[in-house]
Amino acid sequence: MNDKQSRFPLSLSSVVDKKKNGAASAKTVANGARAQATTQTAAKNAALSSQRAERGAPKPLNPVQQGLSQALRSQPSPLPAASRPQTPAQPLLSAAPAPRTAVGNVMTVTQTNNSSHASPLASEAVRRAMVARVAKQGVADAKVLAALEAVPRHMFVEPGLASQAYIDASLPIGHHQTISQPYIVARMIEIMRQNRHGGRLDRVLEIGTGCGYQAAVLSRVAGEVYSIERIKPLHELAKNNLRPLRIANIRLHYGDGMLGLPQVAPFDGIILAAAGLEVPQALLEQLAVGGRLVAPVGARQQVLELIERVDRYEWRRTTMEQCHFVPLRPGTV
Image (tube, rainbow, N blue to C red; front, side):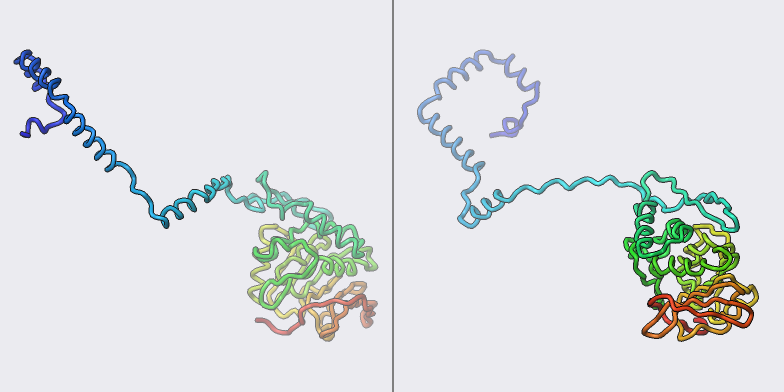
């Protein structure tokens, strides 16, 4: 077979030339073609077709391959993965300044959230449920309960513990310290408010800022809140936690809480968030006449103690209930 015959497809000119140059040749070829359609030709064509079919047909599987093929066919086809709409994360608080309203001497902060899909932890219903549990345990001061409900506790705990923020339990905040359980925060503030001034608290001192949560609750019931923290990283943590809430009546100090703040004394109320074997005398001296100091006292067995300043030289002590706090320590770290 020459090159011209092996080309496919044929050029248009070669086909036209053959048609013009010999109708007779074409007729002869046709007759020859009919003459060659013999039994041998048919057998040869059938053999060629059979060879082509064998080359295209799949080879039979051996027993191992047959078993594997059957196992694969018996496996269910995987279900398509469920599509999940990707929505951008929304901040818990608006970056815009929060509107504030003054109630007496207490600066209240109204939280805003521009997202229609707020975090479940930011829901007021979650905080109301927590407050209801605290009320069932005996806290009856409506103003204290309202303050507890207003402060978003999940903003003061580590992200990994945020889902536990509204259970009535203390949680670790680092440096071997804890955020107090909501009940004990409410109970101590309630006791402090039961003073001879009808619950009025112009100036309050907190010993042990921690993460800043109790200071935020205190800011709702007192005119001015001064809070001291001896652990520098926790002092910075409290500042970072409180900053988004824009609370104007809290003053944070880094120092030895056992010394108090004589430069701004006296205080209508003093709260200690750590337990000593006894209340430091410096703090007793900074309590205003008619004021109340609430502190955990003891080592392993601790009790909540109320100290009232009756006059310049006299204090009255009352044991309230059992509790458990981290130890009160001197100095700074």
